[in-house]
Length: 169
Image 1 (tube, rainbow, N blue to C red):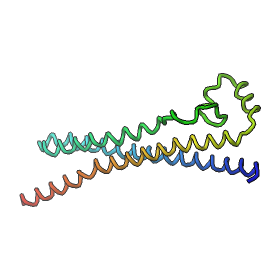
Image 2 (cartoon, rainbow, N blue to C red):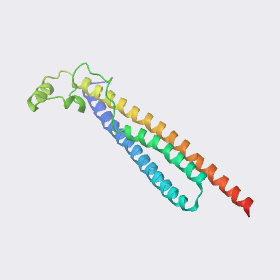
Image 3 (cartoon, one colour):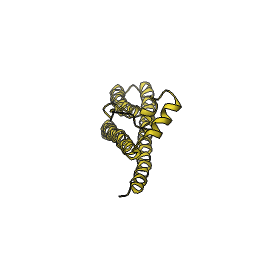
Image 4 (cartoon, helix red, strand yellow):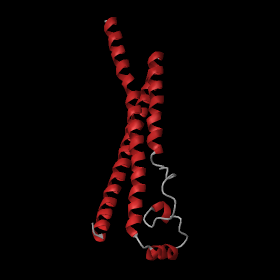
């Protein structure tokens, strides 16, 4: 590949990577909304159960609500990416974490002007952000599995109540 082709490819890849970052964060936001709504709905049902004096159902729902806190916290933690362990040998003129370390505009502009190989910096940026995205996707997968594992007992409770009520009739 020619130098111009490499730079074009890296910029295109960089744009695609940021689309993936947006997608990963959107997935977590939707899951947080779903789990948060489920927890509030369950808590509302728990308060209604107090009136009916169904202690066993109240305890089951409290356990489910408590278990739903796990995926909620996992998804919230994805919004605080751990950039430790990423390439820290030198500053990258494209990586936001490295750019934030500059004290003034002139130093940053001189780094950009003195940069002999911007393609390497852009490639390193792509790798660093891709590592962050992969961590977000792994946390989403774990959070989704925990969410599913928390909600499945609801179906068993519903079946148990239905069978219990059928025996009473």
